[in-house]
Structure formats: structure tokens, C-alpha cells
Length: 338
Image 1 (cartoon, rainbow, N blue to C red):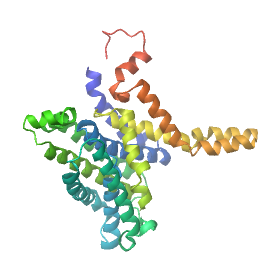
Image 2: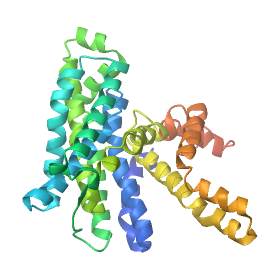
Image 3: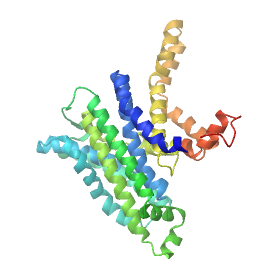
């Protein structure tokens, strides 16, 4: 039990010393992406996994935060780092009226409403060229040359997001969220204002996601509507991070972020250059073509991974960790130390 309780602290210590041991900027970049996705996945999990409101609109709040940071720099000459605060607030400004109206819908209807909002925001950012730059997007000067500051900022934000969600789920607010997820009618019969608490869940998720979007803007230095308001690259990816890691678990999205970024990079690099090396070594044109297809097949990899998770780990990696331990150590005694 002590190992389980100390695992978050051990993981945090490992992440703190990681860039000091592995000094390659490429590794730092991957870990920054992991941490950003851990935040986004955790936000989606709070709304969908704990409160039971499945959403396809995570890109709305992420993109709003990113554009808030970019617009502060582009039009007001204010540091984009202020977007770390105002990006989250701007995301809540979007979430508040949307939730007030659409939380009267349930199930698939609410999910479809979030999908529509995602497309509306993408088209607004694309067509309002005088404000957003349209398809050209927004470009700013990055503050730091080294990736280390971005890494530790992302780590701090991810740790705060996960800790906040953990504390929320241990509070009375968390019990209200769970009651809404399990049976909204029963929760209402007990006097719980389900509409209000769904709004609370949405706005917490929107704030954290908007902050992550602002961090992304500062780190990448360039955004456009197709990137930050992307349905498949942001909204769907957030859902996959939650499903793979474990919906309704605090640390599931963190694990899911590691897995999904790893799978994406595995395919993007052609299994870290293996297919390209084989193609060049054999000089077969067919293998060169295969290597090219593999580098663009990360969506296929995601699909296969999700199918396997649904079949064998329906509760995700964290949710079914006991089954994983049993498969890895079939002769382990039940009474053994954890």
C-alpha cells in the first residue's frame, strides 16, 4: 500500500530530474507534449469520466486559450505569458453560456452540441482574418531558446491540474459529480442542483484546458485554426488519452498521455527510423513506399491501440492495473506485497 501511496511522489521526482539526466532537446520536446496532453486529458476526464458528460469540444477551450495568448501579443503588445491566466478565463467565458444552454441536453445530444461548438470556433478563427490572421494564424517570438523552462512550466501546470482534480474528487464537490454521472435523476431527487454542478465541472475543465492552450502558444510560437481547433488532433486525441489511460481515474490521463504520445512518435518516425533503415539497406522501392506509409499511419496505430484496450482493458491501463499485474506476474501470490 505504501508503494501505491508514494507512487505520485516518485513519479514527480523522476519527472523533475528527467531533463537533467536526458539532455537531448528532442526528449525534452516529447516530454513537454506528454505533460500538455496529461493536462488536456485530465480536463476531459473531469467532465466526462467523473461527471459523465461526454464531450467532443476539448479543442474549443484549448484553442481559446492559445488564441488569447497570441492575440494579447499580436494586438496589445502584451506578453503572451499573461495568456496563462487570461486564456483560462477566456475559455470559461466561452464555457459559461454554452454550458448554461446545452447542459439541458443529455447523452448524445450534449456531445453533438460540443462537436458543433468545436466547428463554430474553428470557422470563426479561420474567417475573422482581421483579428486572428485567418489561416495564416498567429506567430510570436518565443521567450526561451532552451526547452528546459517550458518543460518545468508544463510539469508544474500538469502537477497542479492533477492535484486539483484529485482534491476535488475527494471533496463534497467530487461526490456531487459522481452522483450526476451514476444517476442524474436520483441526484436531483436528493436535492443536488445537477445543472449547476455540471456547469462547475465544465468551467474547471475549461480553465485548465485554456491554460494549457496558452502554454502551447508560448512554447510553439505559432498557431493556426486547423491546429488548435482540430477535432481529430485535439478533441479526439483527448478522448483517446482518457480511454487508454483509464476513464474516471485520477492518474489515467497521465498514463494515457505517455502512451499516446509514444505511439504517435513511434509511427511518425517509422518506428524510430527502423523502416527507413531497412528500406535504404535493401534498396527495394516497395519498402521505401511502405516506410513512407508507416510514418503517416499514426491514426491507424491509435485505432488498433484503442480496440485492444477496449477488448482487454475496458477500464483503461490504470483502471485495470490489477489485471495487468496478474498477466505480467501469473505466479504472484495474492497476499504478496504491493
